[in-house]
Length: 332
Image (cartoon, rainbow, N blue to C red; front, side, top):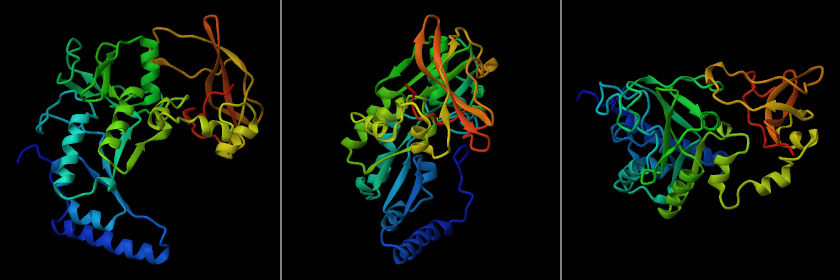
């Protein structure tokens, strides 16, 4: 049938996958009774039909259900969806996908719900048509940190929203948000509100838990992770590990890489930023000899300026050469 994803494997591999999990579980239990075995499954029926899900779950401790990437720039005129912008996560579609599991006697307490700390972006065909269902030509422009077309991290999305002062659309039923900017760019994403909706939904349906792709795509304040952990948040973690306090020892407790925070420097606030021309500033307080900046984060407020700090790391221990990394929270 035209447009429907086809299985590139042999049909016998449907049964072979069950055998693989069965034998893997026996092997792991013999090595260490405490070891677990899981597998990941897609939400789309057209892909899920190649999984003998009813028998797979018998040999796994739980399964991870990929309830994100439901749509993206891979949708095209050749499939049943077409080149139209749709949110990559949608609670209505997620509920329909879970029904496929219940029909195959998969216990809810053996299923984890997937959350994405990122958004799927598009380039609109007509800038005047920016609602779900409008046409797109290709994936959205790459972000300054992720460098991937059709994909923006939660941190990049928050940066765009802050600098463009964009009104965000909220689809409460689908539990997702989206906005358009820069004439023809469009992105859908989860934020603190919609993430909490999905957490509440997972608890209501009696699911085993959640999994995230991926915590390092969060912003410097870990707002997305805080929403998932609500109401406890990261407060306990911060107090135990020194995240949010100054000093080299605090950072080392978290990363063990010998990085330390610089003295604060003034950072001029930007407006109407051309995102593609953005460069991460290295002005003000610099890192010392033998060090380079892994990132810089907000640590205070001034008139028309922000106070920021560099995370200075020894050469060879820098988390990311593009200065994009998990920061460990705001230094105080």
